[in-house]
Amino acid sequence: MVFKNREEAGRLLAKALRDYKGHDVVVLAIPRGGVVVGYYVAEELGCPLDVIVPRKLGAPLQPELAIGAVAEDGTTVLNEDLIESMGIPQQYIERKIREEVAEIKRRVSLYRSGREAIPVKDKIVILVDDGLATGATMRAAINYIKKFGPKAIVVAVPVAPPEVVRSLRREVDKVVCLSTPEPFFAIGQFYEEFEQVEDEEVIRLLSARRGSA
Image (cartoon, rainbow, N blue to C red):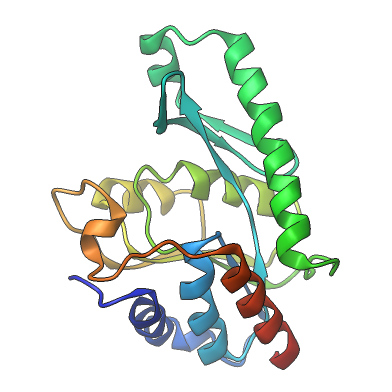
């Protein structure tokens, strides 16, 4: 399956999640592209949209290679096998965690524009992104949000590798994924249009959904 753009992916994902309409649900989207997808999910379900900002921890000299991911409070998921095989020192990992947490806090402040996080205790939390590759950032988001006592956690994405979906099903209440293609090289290969989403668009969509939910 190839999606025209993130809007189409979001509307199709929303249809797959329609059983949650009318329930006490919060959609938490991962910026930037995930917020576009999440907006249309939240619109269809008639629920609020907020942001959750995990960040990938890139390998030395290979920033696109994820050795793990970190959430806002420092909650970390690490690929220990990869770290060991690459001989990555602990000092590097600790420095990357500090750098990424600082960037997360900056982005959260920017995107929420001074608003408080939407409470998720005893609510169904739907975690949305525009796709998953390794699943590292989503795992960091899952581990972070579990600390706030949600009623249930649902991961909802348009596309992801089958082994990532299988793995995540062991960590949350439900995974909704529209397409699990193989081989899987990059999320963008499953979109006709996959342009970069700007911060201004993220802020606009979050603001629009907060005002109408």
